Length: 137
Image 1 (cartoon, helix red, strand yellow):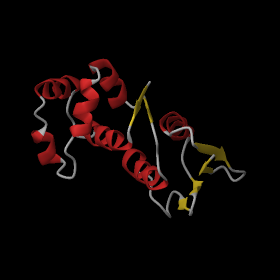
Image 2 (tube, one colour):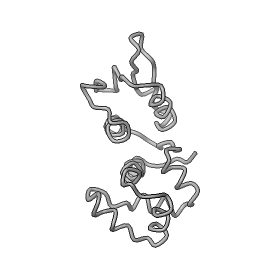
Image 3 (tube, rainbow, N blue to C red):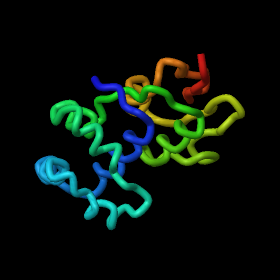
């Protein structure tokens, strides 16, 4: 498992949803010319993905497929990850508190993935009503 930054996680999530095969992604990254992706996702430059790729193809592919831990995640970062990666919405699927997430309604697969992804300063606990909370240690 590789440690990545939050922007790399955002870019990898967007990249994984563009409908491009792994081999096409690798070919593009080998050339360093990611502008075609930028036209599909104009809010991303994919420079963080390129930097991650330059650390090693195998590590990059592992990260692309979700095998990573984010070095440091802020509460707004968690909120955005819940939306981007898992399509979970504030007020519908969870409540955003001043210092964490409360009443997160999701399945065990998402919780397992969050345990892997989130930096170690965050603790996920199951509540008596079956939902989860995420708060800083």
